[in-house]
Length: 298
Image 1: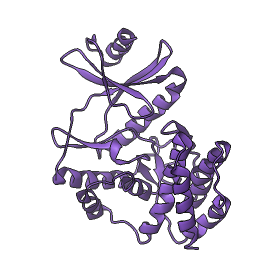
Image 2 (image 1 turned 90 degrees about the horizontal axis):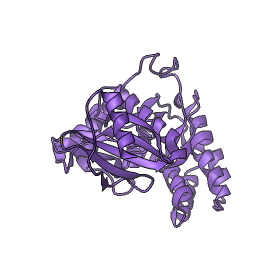
Image 3 (image 1 turned 45 degrees about the vertical axis):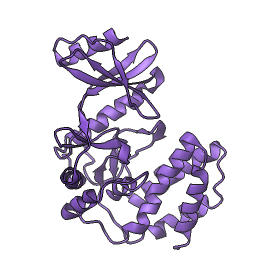
């Protein structure tokens, strides 16, 4: 398998490469990850079942979309495919470090720049910044994420984010008694908020952002689409949050709008529902608490 992947790398890069024994590294809870190196050149390889190759194709497309903004660093996707019953995605290897306050402030500024970026019509399949969604579906974790181009943000969030996750949760046996009421209330919760479509990472928790040893901010493992930029900011506050310097840096460039503190609960509900669909457990009770909190405001 590794020789076939090495051959694909050689084919794409045009450079000699033959890997020595790969080393297992952190790949998260969805994929397994490996360092593939010949001592001079190194790559990060994700593996999953062969049926998940479309997930890797979409991830590579998301990395390329963010790279096209020329704002914040993302690992370059090299190649992807299937071999011996496994799907693989080869990316540029980045040496990650800890990062000080200045690096995290720069990350905030660069993410804000990405959120302000406007793609050309050719880059956005002729849709430009007139709609929410993306030119293809992808995944959030391993859950399908549907991204049909939609003119209205509220409609997009009701149908293709919260509504879709609630449907999946129902099939899984989840009990969310106020879910339908929430879907009806979302237009009121988002009343007066009219975001412009921004390119978003889509899964920006603390495990998907880092600083290289050279001090450069980098984000990875995206679930890319065009949406309200606040979805990225909201998720940075889940699961530990980002350093305060990140938020100061972001607001220097692109200050958040009034009402964000409430909207972030609605936006993070999407991820908590998704975690229920992926892992079950206590995420159902957390989601129900968030739903009840949101309904208390309408």
